Amino acid sequence: MPLSSALPDTGGSTRGPVRSPPARSLVEALELAGRERQREEQELDLAMSEVAREDVQNRRSIDEAYRRIAALKLLRQELEERRAAMASAASRHEWQAVRTGLQADSARFAGRAEEARTAMKARDERIAAEMASPELVAALTEFERYHAEVEPSLASMPAAYRLAISETHERNARRLAPYAAELNSLALRLDAAVEPIGVVACASPADGRPEALVLVLPLPFAVYREWATREEDLGTVFAYRIVAAVCRLLQGIGAADAPIEYFEVHGCLALQVWLGDHVVVGDLREQTLEHIARAYEEGAELRAAGVEVYGVWLRPELLTEDGA
Amino acid sequence: MEQVEGHDLALLRKLRVDQVARWLEIHPFEVVRALVQVDALPADLRLDTDAVERVRTSLGLETWWDGTELPHDDPALIAALIVHLTSRLGVIGDSNLPATSAVVRRPLSTRSDNLFRGLDPERQVFLRRAVNHLVRMGYLDIVMTAAGLSVTLRPESRAELRLLTVGSAGLDALVARTRAERGGGG
Image 1 (cartoon, one colour):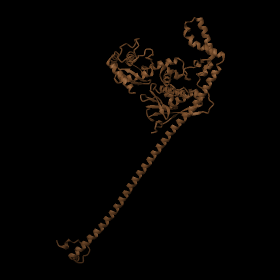
Image 2 (image 1 turned 30 degrees about the vertical axis):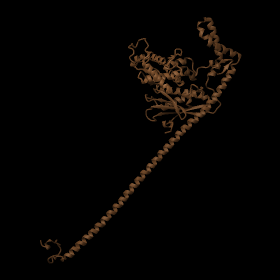
Image 3 (image 1 turned 90 degrees about the vertical axis):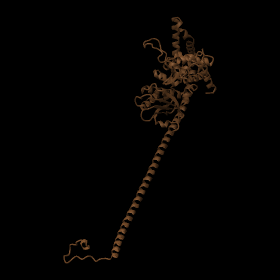
Image 4 (image 1 turned 45 degrees about the vertical axis):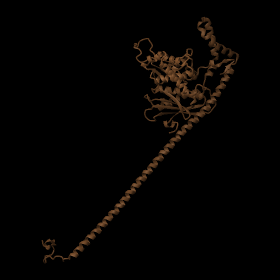
């Protein structure tokens, strides 16, 4: 096909035949094509470098974002560690406070128990002195002889003789009754300020179905371990009252036969009830505190000695030996 | 203890919880628990003499050794314990007596401290070790109850245990093992 017929129709002039562009030499055409290609390559290079630059910028941004994410992660970790350390320190402080509080209560209670013991000794001496009158000594002698010698053979005596002896004995017993009542009384009023004394309790686990109930009393463990050689004192009686309170509590929550163990916590007497084999009826916390309060109400000797007992419900980890 | 002209004022005093515990050879806290269970703990914590029997009954306390018939040597002591165990304890399937029978069945278990109550401390320690061996040998079972550890006799072991008491090599071996433990200071 001729070159002219391959050219596009410009559609403009009608004034004569279309003239072909001036023919270029092969060299010029090649130079032109070369320049064109160079220009296009320059344009592509420019575009590529623009892409590359943007790529670098984006990668830098991504790296920066990653760095920030890592920094935030580290910061979060540090904050969580601080929070954990703070919680641990707070928990440790609480544990230490429980330990210190129990030991302080124990020391104050021991002081009050010693005062009660001294007062009781003085009371008993006073009663003995009052009873040294000839009339009371005679009554006491008869009373003693009745129990040691007469009572075992009373049934075999003639009725009239038995009646006379019994009447004499009743008279002696009535005469001695006020002294006996006073000697048997544990409630001895002390002229002392009221000392608040806490009984600590917890359930384990803290939430959900309780497997164990623990109570810690501000009393030395010797009250339990050395009972055979230790003289009964205010602490012993206090322990009896709390043991009785726990037994009544167990009856109330449907665990009357739950085993109780005694051990030492923070240097104090503790008792643990295994509840894992029972379904506890009612609110264990409320009922425990209620029974502690009731034990105090019944403890006339505690009130007389100026001791005010109250229950405190704590988390179980505060009653561990090592505070872990 | 205060006295007046040679008279002991203790006669006027009621019993303390620890006194009752000492008589019954149990811990005072057990006395308190037993009395609470039968609703008989006085508010003033001072007890009458009938409290002793109440606690004894409530806790199933028995005294197997009265102190006057104590065997003199170790084999006789262990044999006597085995006689106590096999004659005092029943086993499951022991009797086909109807429920209305007036015959009292023997209990299936007893408190572990019943086995030793009334003995001096040295004999108690010796027999505790012997009982541990009897448990390991499969003659007895120990179960935990509210009142503490209880001992039961395995149904198939009664006849074998009785054989032990008639001067068998088994009894000699048991005595030797128990003595060895004592000798080892355990």
